[in-house]
Length: 366
Image (cartoon, rainbow, N blue to C red; front, side, top):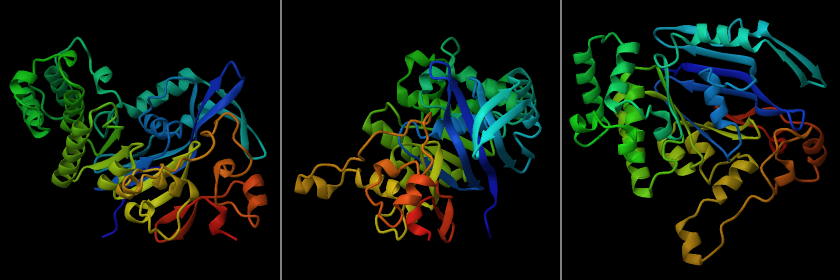
């Protein structure tokens, strides 16, 4: 049976305006992704590649203007089917030149009112998210148990305080919090980073969402705690079959937990396909950027032979000054004379090179 996408993002663009440089920061610039029902989509890339802003755009949480300016975000669950950007285009006027957006005129207040109307029955209920820093995402003045019960009473059919508390305790036990009844009354500042991350996961899943977005779930945690959080996510995926969009810069986590993967760079997707094919070092077709990321991972052979790790030369793309050609060409070590002119002058499309495997690179297209 063919999996169907719960979330389908098409040509999403989220820009910010730099007053000092009088230019747009093109944080998300033409991203297209699909999250299939019951599967995990991993999104990987260097810091600044647009991973987190993509997730925040899906939930309508980008507060700085101009924010999301165009695209389509289709949500299709058992309870709801809609475009999360439906009707919002009327609040935006774009001025383009040579296919690029040069000016944005946006009614920010109107957009926000429209977005809140659409997201009122989506955010938390249909799509839940755990953030990079769980400690700062929790309310410091409210016990963590009360925060979970509030989410349960708001987004599920459970409305009484007593039933919500029992359900919250059940989820604390499920995410392997020790002494759930004791931790229920603790405040976030009295818990470790790993415990706060488990609290966030419990709060997100207790609302019974159709899609879970988890952003850098192991950032800032000790190696042993990171391993436990990854094991927890893997166990919950196996047990609940939850549909997940997993964002991380850690390729090993993406490889372990994801069914498919999107490699992002410079605000767009460079490679997209099954995880075993995209992140396998024996993969047939692979973007030079993906290959460079894989080569930078330490291995047992590197340690035995006392070799230096391979680094990707150059700096991460400045998304204010995006080149007319390939966004990676200035750092690419595989560019040949045959394709140099196209790499410099024309940005390649994201095209299929195999079954469900897409690559944005002139190496694979004549």
